[in-house]
Length: 420
Image (cartoon, rainbow, N blue to C red; front, side, top):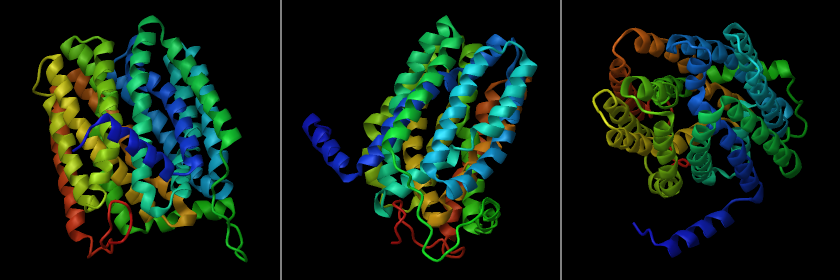
């Protein structure tokens, strides 16, 4: 592996020229928007428990309310993405995000906060499937894995900076976090409106365009895709483990080990920095490997890394566990997204992306509540023991799907989504 500075510069220059201008504009907008998001989200559990004086059980109920609404929102948003276009729905999502962040600043009553959370869940995810559908539209099939790898790098550049800024702001006022998120949403909306085209594929000549009702009805085809549903189920288990990094870990570090919020910010920024430095190189190395084997390997790293938190003491070991988790993340994320893009027919990308969102929605509905019960009433280390058990099942599930793929019509597919 050659890590010389000159070679890195040359590789980055070649990479830039390989992708269209619109893709880079979208990546820049993503960086701005996610910078605001990463100032807020890692500290959201801390905000709720501190501002309202409640425990993790109430945090779990908040995520249940928020995500239940988000599931219905995502389904409708996927259909609207395929019906009305990607750009329109991205702009709508940014508007809702900004308004929601501003509204949270003024809420001091937990019941009102729950109501606002329900409204955000119902309205806020309508634009969720549109961005990934737009990435898929902008790139040829053979470049999508690398494109999603770049998306991961940009995402994590924001994640490297956001938690550090968020930790500093949270130490002064949580209101600053939500105000900053609203501002970054507004800036991103201007970039998308001014500089990006609509990428929705045109309806073939002579073919009537679907109505919104027909677009929603098209989900029947998605749910009939047996292979995709198995993949989605295993991904639910994967996400149930991974989400502990942002929901449970900061509270666990504070309450069980006495760390300050800035210590959590440090290891999350380290996670992001590793992705920025290594993601694209790793993506190219694994691009020709069987994708489901790669998913199983990445899940094994998740399993080991998260289970470690139940056995270790001291900041150095917490950071070491995050290194293991980050390696798994760099392996899983771009390959998983490329597989979804491969599953989806061109005219149904929004809906496939929306259903893939269920791999996050289902865990968000139930896992924080279950984890909250453990954190508040039992030995909190059991959260990490459970991550080891669930992660092992998911690892075996991805590998089983790889072994069965010929029988269930998946065929030989490379990580780039190109038939071998």
